[in-house]
Image (cartoon, rainbow, N blue to C red; front, side, top):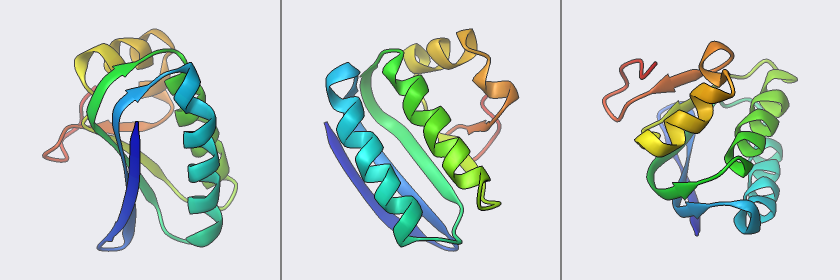
Length: 109
């Protein structure tokens, strides 16, 4: 698993590559907690276009980040989720609660 971030315009874009499963979730959650603290006003984009696998632990990652950002009035955008990950997100009903876009920025759900 690789996780990096960069500022793009007024947003912080966090890139998660390879796998996001149970074993990687704790490290990802810790990294995202630091992003929330280090960038206290910026909205966040979670770019999942480099994922090769995601299990239900990805739901916890998305929900925790969404809640942390919402507490400070910020938004979360999830970009480029691969089909397997989108099936997990849809099954949990997350597209009704947060914004999912493709790599072009067009609504994914």
